Amino acid sequence: MLGTVLLTFAAITVLHAAFSTYEHLSHLKAMGRPEGSLPIDIIVEALFALICGTLGASLNAPPLKEISWAAEMRKRNIDEMDSRLGFASFVNRGRNLFSGPSSQTKLK
Amino acid sequence: MSLSHSALEKLATFRANNTRASQETFKNASTVLKSFKRLGDDGWAVLEQLFLASVDVGRLDVADECLRQLGKQFPDSPRVDVLTGIRMEATESPDVVLEYYAQLLDADSANAAIWKRKISVLRRTGKIEKAVEELSQLLDTFYTDVEGWLELADIYTSCNQYIPALQALSHVLLLAAQNPFYQLQFAETAYTAGDIPLALKAFLVAVEMSERDLSDKSPPVGISVRAWLGVKLCSRRLLLNSSPSASNTVVPKNLHLIEELATERVLGVYSSKSSSTRAPEGRDVVVGWVGDR
Image (cartoon, rainbow over all chains, first blue to last red; front, side, top):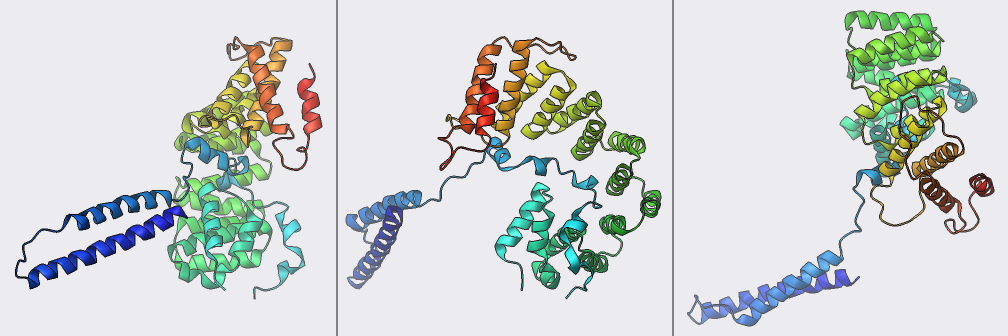
């Protein structure tokens, strides 16, 4: 929540600083001094938006995922590790248990 | 009706983890027959998965349709030959199937997948010695096949020959070094073979592998429970009467402390604090067994 607020605020501030720069530069161009430097408050505003945006993005990051090998192993179970699918026997009780009376009907 | 995103993810997880959840695969993937072209390359893998699941579940009509589509797309593929063989295994007699496999192996003698199917048929029909002989030849050719070594260990264990099973499992431990499941299997086989110090050592290694990254004292989950129960079992037996080790494994010095730690960890799993509403099943049995000296 706070992260989203900060990020939105920083985005708006950056856009405002950009618009102020555009206005200032066109003002300078209108006054005939196109090579002037930016006023310090626009620079401060842009840097402040950078800091707020970084803070907001860090707070907004999704929760950290476990990447260690032991954590990955905790998600598995013995049936997966010992499945030996290359040698699996497909002649088992499955056909009697699961197919039911519909096994002989044609595929719709 | 095409497959939903979550169903596709689940099927991809099944493929990656070698899970054999045939009923669930069949339920999730049975709609793929109409829409697999939309899935691109994954569609063929899902079709193969659906084929295997439907043969397992007994729906041979769906399996035939999958095989027909796969055969149409990949005409001379060895992988489709394996699937054809599996389909034949489901209905034909073993001799017919073995003849088909022999024909394929004549054409290409290093086709590991067909060789494995032949060994599976030999084992299923009871020709265990022939199966072990063929499997040993396969493992001589393809040493790094973890599945093959596991199958060899399983065949030996089913015949109560635990020392050769331990030898096969030691190759598995070499090939898949950081896997706590195979370590646990090795430990339990060693215990059954009577070599208690070796079993204790292997149980402790399994515990260390599966709890390596945990910093808090939360109760064990998954195979850690089984490993801790094994540690308790072995350490109690060694404290009661020291048994000789066929592999000359040294017994750890602080056996009392190890046993106390194992008791504490096991009780931690079955304590009423760790479950929300009522005590876990088997709590009374475990508490009685653990406290019984």
